[in-house]
Image (cartoon, rainbow, N blue to C red; front, side):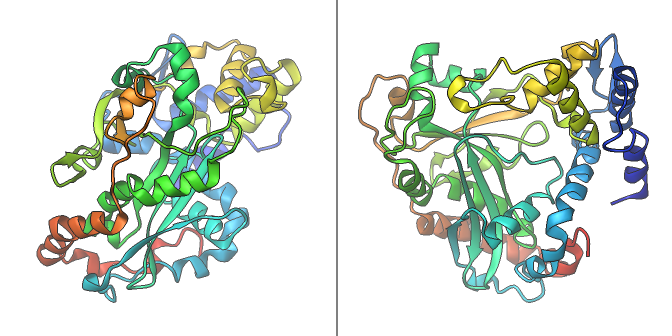
Length: 391
């Protein structure tokens, strides 16, 4: 973590300090500017040169804050985690043999997953509602290749809804057959061997659908109270930094696995992900009450978005500050031949695609892995110790 990053966070105030709303308002506006945003007329503006590196820089303070907070629990495990990261010098490319391992709650794998996600250049959410998390493990080299996290999709996502052809009522009935990939990617040195493509392919595999069925078949939905039949029809995901070069070219033979369907409108709350968020939460708890949450979901505020919007109003700031302007490309991943028709309610029976992980890997191996390893050996320079966050 850079000294510059530490200094920028400290100027927002000491966490836990009981500030007045006026002081909190000033600190929040200062923090937005420190991230690189311009605040004009109650609206957040992106810098004029908003290229990928610029957008990555906008996320820096939020990422550093999350690393500090998570480090309180995870730092002592880092030497063990680093032992599960491959050395480029020792990696046997010909021996790579991937397997998806479902992450169990309160396990060492869960801690590793959280640690690995802290290396992403944008803050990774924990997912919402239902969750499935996986490690992609290389059994041939006994190291972790990548991570994959699936969670409940957001209800309002216009590009996805247009692609499916949903009306509101059908969406309420069928959205339980959709999951969102909230984190997906490869760890080094596999990332340099295009391992991110393999993790993306693995998300569409039979193994993921089967894990979903094992976990959720027979479970009751929270609001409707209906029993789930265990089918998973569609995945969604969003690029991290504008247009995606990764998802745009993920295919299996002639089948394009990730279909681009549009862009987000640039709303979110990553630019409030700091110690200031805790102060916003405290302010909202004292002065407001939850309104966006269904009674069956329990007490409290539904999510960070509700807290931020209510907090901005309490501070006399425009909720337009919630729109950061970073538009992300949306992709849908059909897991069945008739995924859209099924989700529209036109087909009653889902016809799943047959995509076993080993067949996906065999294609990836010949199409991307071996050619990349032969023409570019820079992955050999990677050392696990260079991946340390705290030690």
